[in-house]
Image (cartoon, rainbow, N blue to C red; front, side, top):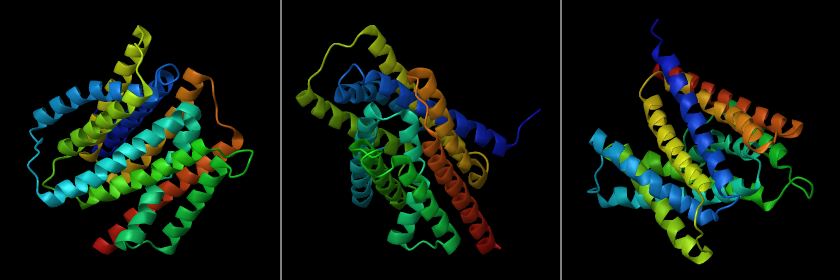
Length: 293
């Protein structure tokens, strides 16, 4: 029995989120024994080849772009590098589910930034939902001497740079292929990590560490491709909320691989963030439908 495009899109989104979270888990395990910058550089070197092959197969990779597009891509690449490095630095020291819960605030932060920067319409219902979501983030990080540390701050900073990255992406014209954006972003992160690793030093990876690098790279490429497939089928308003399944995967992999589970307050904060995000997506879809009518 064939499934609908919406269900297929939801399935693709689930697979993409599982792959991205598996990549995070492999990187967390890898950086316990291998220097952080070396780990990021090795993953990048493993990832670039498959991304170039995918880009070539899609026939959409090109570097001859207008100066304006390269300017936006430069801003986006800086934000990509900063968000990746901050996220992975925090991941080394934080439970994966806790950091994942903080990252779930990203759609809320993007909506708020789009309202503040581009003047996009955001009604009082969505603004209220966004504020409730950020209350959830505060519950997760628990400002104060008992719950908050600078690793949580790095996670929040990573969200801020992802917002810059996503808003920059909105400014790119349709003439810029997605595969070009992905390759430039990956190359930027890899080159930066290689430069940083020279100061930090390298060590010879073990067979187990090489397998973790390969698994992280494969999961990243797999997740990227399924994320692209997700955008091509189904109604985005139906499919988008399934991105929050990454939190479920993070809880499961955190328990299975590292023996950690989020406490009750973290789960409460995560529920507020996810609930607010889903409501914001639903409300945005409804407003657009009413405007179209």
